[in-house]
Image (tube, rainbow, N blue to C red; front, top):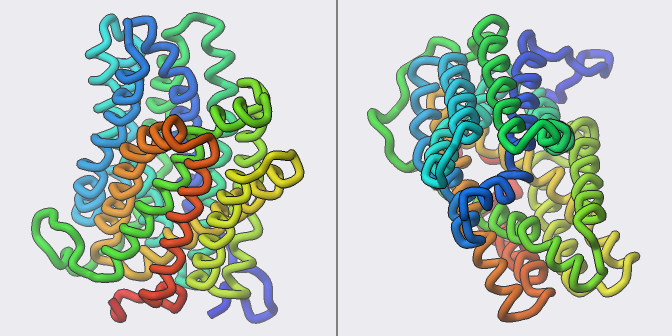
Length: 396
């Protein structure tokens, strides 16, 4: 199957797909509202830089624990109720953060928000449920574009909301999540088809070698990318005299490239070269791009490296999601997606502090170059494990 009709036209989007897409986009808008201002907000409660780092880590730690559990729950009771529960939890976490009067309440709010972070992985499973196999790469790629849209619009909305006071952006994020939950109750379809019960009772780490390997690859590549995200502002300031505004412009450009690649180009590329091959090509591009960024001392080389990173990440991320879909099978897709999300969360816990330590002790170039090396290792592992070839549940 090619994902096209007999005359070569693209197949229509499944019924309910755009409802899921909108749900993810709004969820990421809320996330984008909160993240850029959280550190400054926490300083009002006497938080040190160390405490702010753990404030961000608390979200990822809670997500690490709960994403597989909620994914497993979605395999049992359906995708829709778990997405709704997650959105309600996000709303509660945002309101708690906005109403905080002490630092420990901020940690509580971030823990609630992180524990509710399964809506994204369950939404990915829902798209895989509703799509024909030939359609999935295009639909997964466009779902990735919703991530980019959220991160582009969120900070802008958060900046405007902050004009009303430091608490207002969190209330806006909470209200947005509440509206999103109500809309999901009314409009979100249930995509989990009645099938045989999941193969395992209770939560356990996946026994399929392909899923464990994909989780490790996800950890390595996310670790490298968040190291880049966490230290680029420091790198840009030290080597290129970038200000906060110009750094934000760089990340806006990266977000727009990701939206363009995942929203349109990824599906066509997947049809031509195949998802497994595209994944290893994307890892290679990210690895080269990070090293080029790290060694760059002039704008042409820097922009070239950033383009490689953006394009590579734009194809590697949805490719990995589709590989997990293929390796999981229908019965345990939600749990597999949650487990994959858990590996990303753990990378976000360790990536920023270790990258900052490397920046301080080894030099401004080190987080980028080491991130490129780690991504290169992931690409070699993917080839060595045969991840560049088709992966299916039966094969695993």
